[in-house]
Amino acid sequence: MIETWLDFPFWLGVPATLIVWLATAAALWWFFQRSRLAPFWRDNLGVVAPYFSSVAVLFSLSVGFMGADIWQRAEQAQQSVLQEASNLKLLSHLAEVLEPPTTQPLAERICTYAKAVVQQEWPTMLLDGEASPTAETALDNMMLSLAAPEFTARVDATLRREMLSAFNQVRQYRVNRIQLSSGHSHIGKWVLVIFLGFMTQIAIGLVQLDKSRAQAITLAVFSIATAVTLTLLASMDQPFTEPFAVLNTPIADLARCN
Image 1: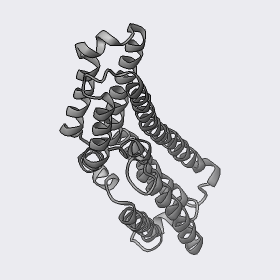
Image 2: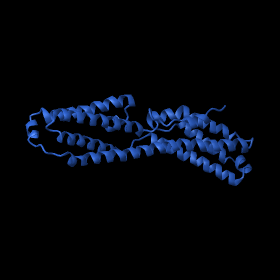
Image 3: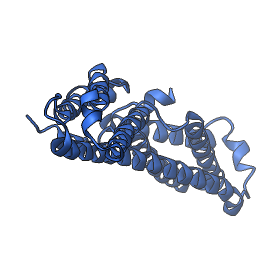
């Protein structure tokens, strides 16, 4: 259920989350003020706010840790795209200057790979979190160009090692990019945050048992704040999806070639 909610588009996740949390708040208010157990709750006044604020502190800490984890994933996704593009650009520049004319230009294969990533792998990655076979083939062809006997015979060994290192970086950052697009933060963390949010709702209700209107207002305010916060975190949990998506612009710039 949580994974289904995390996969909601942003425009659907906001109202859906608001409805769930406000409905929970309304159910708690009814339980404390209008249910058959309401007289029991009214006879148990005296629960002080500072005591139950410990639940809210745990909730805020869990949200903070979750946010830090999600922002780290977003930073890793951004760095993966930038580093993949940077190493591709380095290989392209070196290939244009140094590659022997007797072999198929490495620059053309780099261009082919960049186009495959932008046109085929990126949509597949967003939809299914999977790699594109076309991009994989293009990457393998780049490796074949670097390992071709004609190439190795005419390029200095030190420079060849640098180019192979750049190629390995492209492959590694591509793997990181695909891995980050195919999953969420650990579901257990989301379970903890949602559970503590619900417990905080209960704690808020328990300190306002004798004030029906104040209880309704505080429950509503907390529920709205929680729903918006969790929706924003959920939308950032997948770093390549809108509205806070990491863009493919650095790689797309390399795909503008003949």
